[in-house]
Image (cartoon, rainbow, N blue to C red; front, side, top):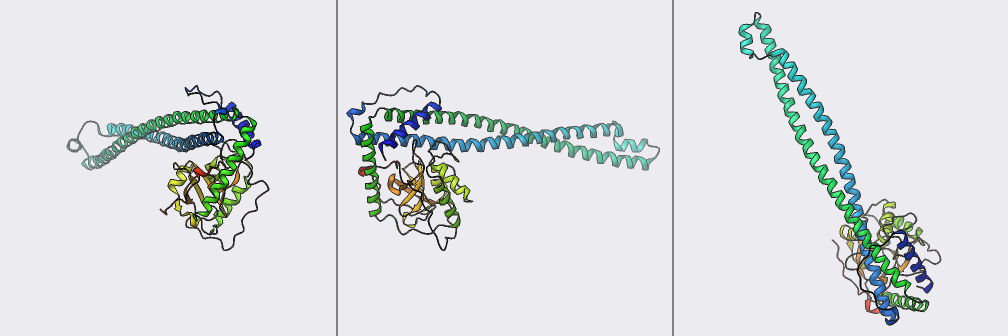
Length: 385
């Protein structure tokens, strides 16, 4: 990564900080003056800040998904409740009509007494049969009415609970959004405090760290020969490559910008295989595959908390939306500590022939969010679930 790109990152993050509105006041100890820290310490701190921002972003994304589902649930329950209330009103009307009709036809006399007093016993018997049927219909109507009332009460209770949960999720989302703002503000402050010379040195150290990490990773034998993607995997890869150069933006799902899991989820959705929105859910719900069985289109998940994700291209490279201030790019697979890999289309049939998409010039330019040698990932163990 060049010093120019770091300055662009600084500008982008500062712009994002302004667009996010005023950052809530947070009591934090003042950081040590940058001049007193080594470049390695600055790099470690910057990487930590980006990682915390991405963790907060993925938490925000997860809550957003829950909130979308909850809003749909509230709407569904409210529709059912309106329908139940209409049925209840119709049931009450039917019960009232039956009661009035039975009163007009039967009065207060029992069918046996009406038979004794009638001048026409057969007519009395026929009338008694009608009245008896009306009584049965009335009992059935009353039963249905009671059922409608119970269902309406239950739906009203569930709708209130669902709405309460929606309100709680919205409040949680606001807290998480504020957490992202605070962390991005910390990144902004650190970058703004660095001189041009420090930025250039920081870029050089980070670039060397990524190269070392990749060399170690490839030498570990963690990767095998690349498999061939399915037709869906091919479409997902080509879509992701078409997004190269578009800026990272937290919570974004395109088409103008993406965050890490926004890119992977939209790519697979466009390929015809919807997958979970967040990196944690992708790691938790998709089938795990060993790294030595990777094929283009598989998702590589990073960090112990599964807070970052990229799409495997082949030859030890991934396409990813790296971090705020950066753009969608092609990176070494080991630019971040690998947790494992998942496959969105485990049952798909690999293509017989596969030609990787051509990468445009500058596809690998920019920050990879790499780690120095001390942070280089070992060959991780993965398992198929």
